[in-house]
Length: 322
Image (cartoon, rainbow, N blue to C red; front, side):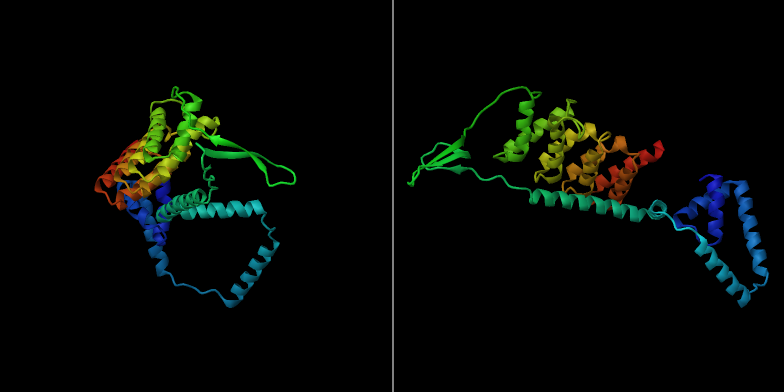
């Protein structure tokens, strides 16, 4: 705390309006600063001198005249524009948030929970792909019906359809077609093993420094990162979520969406391994205010002592940097 802040806080302390969290830093500063200590003692002496003087109540006529002049002055003030009201309310709300760390943490947690609930709702209500139809005597599933022709004056109908035929493709992991099929494997895999292998291969590509794109890049590249984010949030297997988390590690500092997903995993993931990996991933961005808020919460509330200790050490490192 510098002298300028201390001078302001001294006045608030004398009137009993200084927040509790600033009381101890002020006392520490005053005990080590001669100038602020003189200011503190002078203000105490002034208050004691004023307390000895009798308090004179204003006359009723003076109060009535003052209220009338105040009402007239308020009536003459021009109405504030919508922009002024908006910024006034925004700065007032910002002041409330800065003075209440608990409220900030609550809002942050509510935002994570709300975003998670909305995402789960969208996934649950997304349109489902129709189940493939298999005709008796046919060797494959029906993909689509391309045409229908009925013979006039008869019940004879000709239906043209396309069948689903299993295929195989081989190529490099840098091949866009291979990458697209791997992304489909994270959503439409026939077995859990295929799904886990798809996530693992994509995560290894990203962790190795190969191009995995962002929301501003081409659709193929951005789809890899989006697929890993979806696996981190919604996959039931802790091993798969851990793989997705490792693949997203190179982007936690530059991509806000990745950082938010890692913070969400740290607060709500049921796996201690995933939460522990999330803590280590946040070390490069420990100076971020939202990261510090989540780490502060986890360091006191997480059920795992090792994760609480790891979060506390990351917070300590952030304090040393500052």
